[in-house]
Image (cartoon, rainbow, N blue to C red; front, side):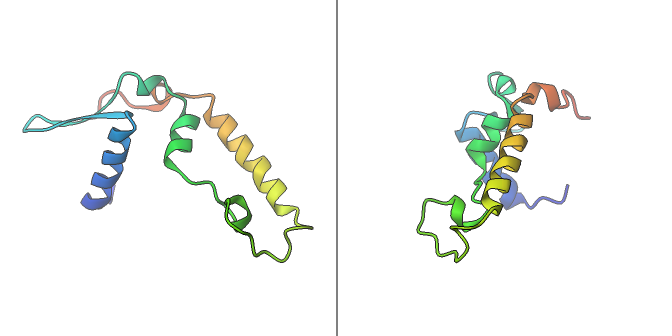
Length: 102
């Protein structure tokens, strides 16, 4: 898939710390989806692993945007984000994962 080893290690460590995957060391080791994680919605996983500060005004920091009082973009982006997360909330990892990869 073209993912660097370092990036893969960082991502797998984060997912393991969150309890989404289980890691096994050794010759027969590897990664597997934890039983509980398969029941968690994609929405919950994405919310725990991604930042949704699409624009400066989405963060809790002081906003310097000149248009913030009259801007309609934030409202549109919020609606799009809500629709995206709502869609992810309708599926779990068990619904979208391949059981055996050979």
